[in-house]
Image (tube, rainbow, N blue to C red; front, side, top):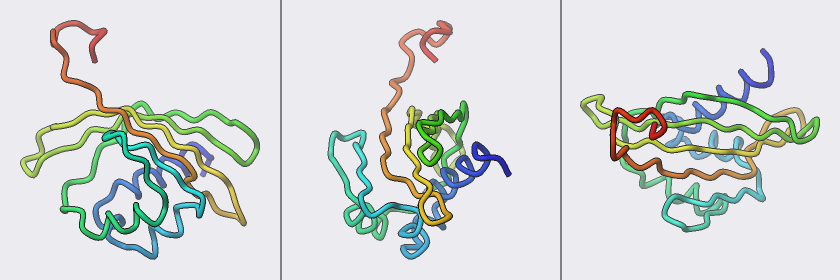
Length: 131
């Protein structure tokens, strides 16, 4: 499996509700020095993310599209993508652009940074520049 496929799979795991409730598994995927800039403007570290996930309301997994990677060094990769969150009826309710930095440590990839930025609904749905 190539690096892009491997990191996409890891991002999808971190968005999977079943994985998100599995603290030991999520803990392995998140680096000790992890930091996240949340859409709310709050800053999270590994401990706060693991704590928040314990009480997260279950929801359908988000869909990843437009996934791309950029090698920053042989052991550091920037991953970018668009995420779509759905409600219980399968209707899209939130779109965001996401970026993560993954570091290859001791034979495994760990996420060290993440940021999600909400995409506002288009004011003119027929304008392709607003998608």
